[in-house]
Structure formats: C-alpha cells, structure tokens
Image 1 (cartoon, rainbow over the protein chains, first blue to last red):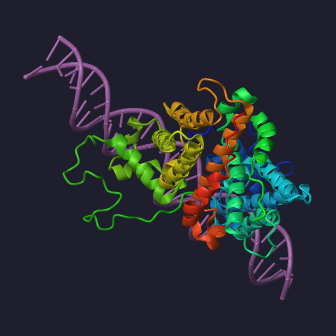
Image 2 (spheres, chains in turn green, brown, cyan, blue; image 1 turned 90 degrees about the horizontal axis):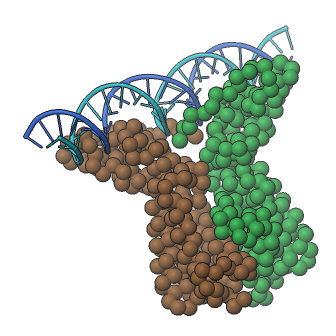
Amino acid sequence: MNNVKIKRRKNPGTRIVSKPVKSAKKRPYHHGDLKDQLVAAAEAIILERGVEGFTLREAARRAGVSPAAPAHHFRDAKGLLGEVTLRGYRDFAAALAAGDARGGSDPAARLKEQGLAYVRFAMRNQARFQLMFQHGKYDMSYPGLGEAGAAAFAVLDNAVHAAMRIPEGERLSPDAFGFLLATWSIVHGFAHLALGGEFTLAAEPYGGQKAVLDRFLPAMLNYLPAPVRK
Amino acid sequence: MNNVKIKRRKNPGTRIVSKPVKSAKKRPYHHGDLKDQLVAAAEAIILERGVEGFTLREAARRAGVSPAAPAHHFRDAKGLLGEVTLRGYRDFAAALAAGDARGGSDPAARLKEQGLAYVRFAMRNQARFQLMFQHGKYDMSYPGLGEAGAAAFAVLDNAVHAAMRIPEGERLSPDAFGFLLATWSIVHGFAHLALGGEFTLAAEPYGGQKAVLDRFLPAMLNYLPAPVRK
DNA sequence: TTACGATCTTAACAACGTATAGATAATCTA
DNA sequence: TAGATTATCTATACGTTGTTAAGATCGTAA
C-alpha cells in the first residue's frame, strides 16, 4: 500500500505545490497558522488522491513543517482527520438546516430540500463526506464529533416530527421512525453511490452522472413516501 | 496511521492465530494453497481490524510465508484485495439472485426479497461489503471485477424490467430507471448506514440495531414505490 | 529581565510495501 | 528416467510511513 511516489521539488527555486505557503519572506521558526493549514492540506490531499492517499507527512510537507510538528496540534494522524471530519459535520448540519429552511412551512418540501442538500453537500465536499462515513480512518472520539453528528441528525429528526405532526419533545412513533430510516437511507444511499461513481455506467444512456443529479434525484425524492399523519 | 502493534506469539508452543495453518508437520518449502489462504487471511484481518487495519505483511504472516511470497500470486497488496472484492461481488450477485428467486413470480416480492438479501449480505459479509464500495483500497482493474459488478447489477435490472413490464432486451424508460435508482439507493443506504453503526443511537428506543434489521427493514421495503406499469 | 510554556526541528525506531537475487520444488520434455 | 524449465518461496534491502524523544526557538507573563 506504499506506492513509490514520484520525487518532486526538482527546481528548488520555483514555486511548487508542496512548498510552504509563507515561502515569500523567510519562514519564521514558528508557523503561526499551522493547525488550520494542516486541516486545509489534509482536505486537499484527500481530494487529489482519495482518502487512502492521505499521509500525515505529506500534510506537514505542504504546510512547510517537519513531520513531528503536527503532534503539537493533534494527538496523531487520526486526530487531524478527526478535526477534518468535525468541520465536515458542522458544515453538513448547516447545509441541511439551510435546505430545511428553503422548504418553508411545508413538511414535505422541507424533507425534499433536505434531501437535495444532503446529496449536494456530498458532491461538493467529497473529501469530507468520504471521511465522515469512513470509520476507522479518523479518531471517532475526537472532542465535539458526537455532538456535531447528533446536531446533523436532529435536523432530519425535527423535519420528520413536523411531517408526522409529533410534538418536538415527544418520541417518534415506530411508524414515524421507520419513515425517518427510509428517508435517511434513500438519500444517503444515493449520495454514497453517486460519489463512488456506481451510477456512471448505468446512467450513460440517460445523460450521464450530471443528468442523474439534476433530473433523477429530484424525481427520486418524490418517491419518498408521503408523510402519513399516523 | 502506523499504530504500534502488540507483540504476539509469546508462548511459541501453543496454537496462535497468526501461526501458519499447516504447522502440524514441518511446513514444506512450497505452501501449496497460498493464494486461497491469503484471501482468507485478508478477510479475517479486515473483520478483526477493519479495512484500514489490513496489511499485506500480516496476511503473509498468517499464511506462514515471507512478506515477498504474495507477489507470486498478486501484483501487489491492492491486487490481493481485488481478489477479495471479486469473490465478494460473485457471492453478492448469487445472494441477490437467490433473493430474487425467493420472490417467485410477483415482481414486487422479487424486489423486496432482493432488498432483504442486499442488506443481509452486507451484514453477514462485512469485510467484503466494506471493501466493495471502498474504491482506491483495491485494484479496480483486477481481472473479472467489471463483469462481476455488472452481473450483480443485472439482477436488479432484470427485476425492474419485470416490474415495469419492459422486455428484457429493451432499455428502461426514464421513469423506470428512476425507480431503479431509488430502489438501489434506499437499500444500499440502509446497508451502509447500518454497517457503519449510524443507527445505533437513534434506534436505541426502538429495540436497537437488531430490531431495526428485523422489523424496520422489511417495513421500509414496503415504502418502495409500488412499481407502476408506465 | 527572566522564567516558562507553546511551538517547532532533528534524529531515530519499528512497521510497512515492494523489488532483486537466489533457493527449492514441481512439471515438462526428450 | 534424466535434464531442463518454470513456478513458488526465502533472504535481503530500500524508501516511506507514523510516532517518539530530546533539544532549539519564540511569545508572553511574572
């Protein structure tokens, strides 16, 4: 799993992707913004090479620091990816909430807009989304992760409460919970399959991946079982 | 990502997991069944430690050979995982076909049974299923993989053809294809989320993960949009 | 000013994937 | 059956990875 990587930085003078960002003035001993830049580098690496292609040393390289520097900001490599995942979950919850708001006061519209937002987020934040559902790759006990995940779930949960006319504090009926599972499943499955490119072959006669997202996804969300008033 | 592993084989006399299988008689120079045992070892490792925990050296260790031995059967580590994935896809297609058969002549029943089989396969073959949808971890160009994936897809495709009363050779109507996407998505999403343990928290008041699989999954499959005769 | 904690570097270690060269066994050919 | 060829395995080595330990540098508060 340790591919032989191509050597880079042949011309030490020219600007190179993996070079330190603050290379203009001689970089001081202290970086100043290492934590954020490590997160940014990690996301970039995952985008370029996939989740498997991420290495802590490469992230450090791009931030222009030694391989041991990240240890002062994250417990280990999985900790850094934990932070990436955390920020992913926060933006994810925000995106879902924005979709929910776009739905206005109609429960069905709220759910549909949330579904659109769910898939759109996955496609626009591929690195994060891949990571979020790839347990074992990041530190699942990273502080804040549990709350952030719960917050994202709550957006869906609230919309289902509204759709089923169940008061906020009350527990969902089994029927309503089944409906929640179905909604979550269909949207997540679509996002995961689309992101994995599983549709590309089958969707070719129908306009390709883009058409699937633009035309079939909204249509599919209409297949969502109409919310029943228990 | 290179955790310090606990040293094992403290009591060199007792039977130990990572020991060669044919340890009874002095192992001959040639293994005799290395390819299959490497595949088995890989699946076992993934089950125990997750996809991220797999290493080629550990697989070789369990088969009782040197780290370089696998190279004679697989191009590289991703090749071995490609073979694991290939066998996964074959068993997967067989499981779907068996479910389809259980559905008899009723198109809706065929689809429902396929859905049950889809999720059941994921839960009973966690190592393989995780791998199958984890591109980048295995060699996607491994010989036979494309055909095996297409074969699995064909099982669903055929059932949708039947449900929509479309002749086998004919292309699905856009509506029918949308229905296929929805069906695939809901089943795959459920399997992926359940396997990832995403339901455990939310499902706690409803009987836990097991109840979700036993009661909510079948109920959810009834949410599948009833096949319309275009 | 000095002391101290935070942040970084250097150096080293074990484990990894993989390539090369040589050893051994099975099979094919004459 | 004898010899040669091929398949299969070991030994060794290289570069890369994650992580740790010890020391250097900097910001800041006493």
